[in-house]
Length: 551
Image (cartoon, rainbow, N blue to C red; front, side):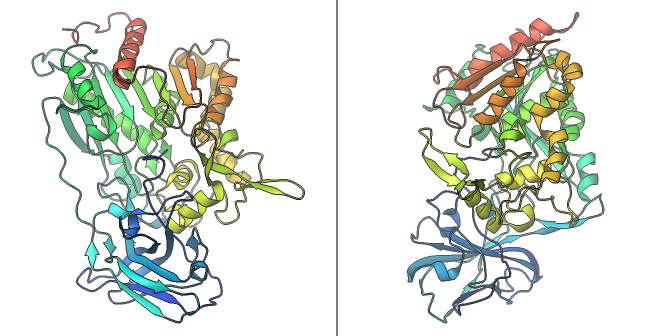
């Protein structure tokens, strides 16, 4: 799950055909100097009570958010205006009419879409990733206006015009390769065929100390799954400069021979729906699972002398990466030899955060004969609710219609759901009413509900998964993800022929991102890498290379 402190992201809204009742409106356009060609995309109006940071950086799905509105545009010509008025749906307030009279800081923004001609015959318009990890406010090439202070009044007939005269710059250059850190990119033929244009998969590699000096050594591979990161500072926190953080301690342990000599790789698989693919094959996102296991990892192992056998691979990650680690082990049971799964996204869809996709009627409300209670979506570790399912979904809807927000629930829908008649992901539930489509949910169940899949297929999967699954989650997970892990554990404890022989660790009163009980001063990698390698050694086939990488 994309958290960045649970918040850190973005914004705004979608135009719905409601009757216009007020004259106050905004007209947002871009000059020909910014683009001579018409543009497709999502025009955003951001309204804030504070000037700094810029309004585009102040929108989130909690009660602490500022205000946003948005409309889709197709072929918006330079100089032509996108209109935001009282008929435009907003977040968190519904309408411009609901904004109290007063002085505010406002900003216009255009999240530019590109057209994709998919192999399934559909044509869709989506926000491409441009190396920033699907952060609309920071996406290179997107247009925005300078922040200006204005007086708003629902009773006024004023027209406020915003010109998008600024452009988000390119992302900084990737840090150069070092003795230990390498960056690779390959063209994926599988994904290029699916998307109808060239698609690359990337990886950032951490090589063991002594890799250059021991050219005959081959190494186990550890795959770290998670959100997009341009390097290892953000994902692995590997840092060669002295600092108080865990990154420098990892560098010291890595280069002093205190850790097993293995290759660690992170994967860069941002796509038009999210900052990563969830590492599985998807009707909407493409065959990322096969592309990673059949194209990217074999390339990395060949280039950097990985052992290249299933017994010598393990996978781990947290949040989205936790789900990916578990899914990778389940869907490719012979390809990996162990999954260390931390605070995973929903692993049992009977606990899809705070809803049961198969039995509940509504994603937003717990309903009784005469009352309804809002379903929470985010909480503090002490139980204080910070956001609801209705809020989170409206936030995403205003960020992008047709599941194009590049936010969490839309990302799950893009990965898990079937293709709709319009070529976009088929909605699992209505983002305005919360009504769940149980037919759509059944499609998800047999394909991506990891708990259900393991229960259904344990006779064949069990022998390949026994002793490979290790799962940690806080029992006060910020997004209620512990509910699904409990259901998975309930099943695992009933397994026979074989018993699952794995482990579950529920951190008492721990929020999202709990990764087990260990000394933070030691570091996550330092704690788990020896355990992963020990498991590999104990389960290696006869004649396996257990020596060349030990020096």
